[in-house]
Length: 210
Image (cartoon, rainbow, N blue to C red):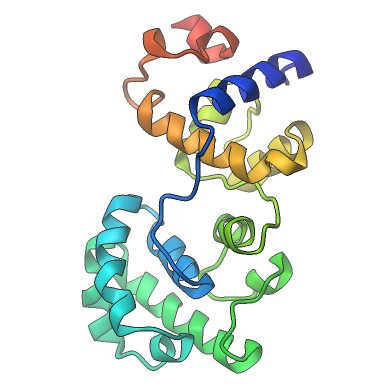
């Protein structure tokens, strides 16, 4: 685990680079963000935003999604990948929201995790962006960067989340997650990280080896 001074330097540099890092998914309501985040699994936010632009015009409430024709919904979200599983989970998730939460997206981790297709990553996205409850969102970018930076040695997203929670101040959890995503897209990509152009390199375990 890195020392506090190095971790502080990493946070300061990410703050400088991405002062306004936010969620890249387009949404207007808690339900829309919940659905969009489920669709974003193994898919780019850009693709999801294209799909949801039309999807959210047709389905406006949890009841609309719960009553959707499964085959039709599958085709409407097909381009996001894993569409059969996603469509099934979205329908079942929204049915549960209608039956147990009066059509409103619940506002706690415990309740969100009872919804079909909702794991800690999706729950943290919703809690952080809708309900201002800080959380570490571990997507592929956060997993890759937190390992390269030496902030964790874990590969399991939940273990990474809890490792980061121990060393990142709680009030920065959500923003730090977004900054890792932004930096992963802009500089520290999976196959060819641009270490020479990276201002975080002086504090990066992977960067010092490259």
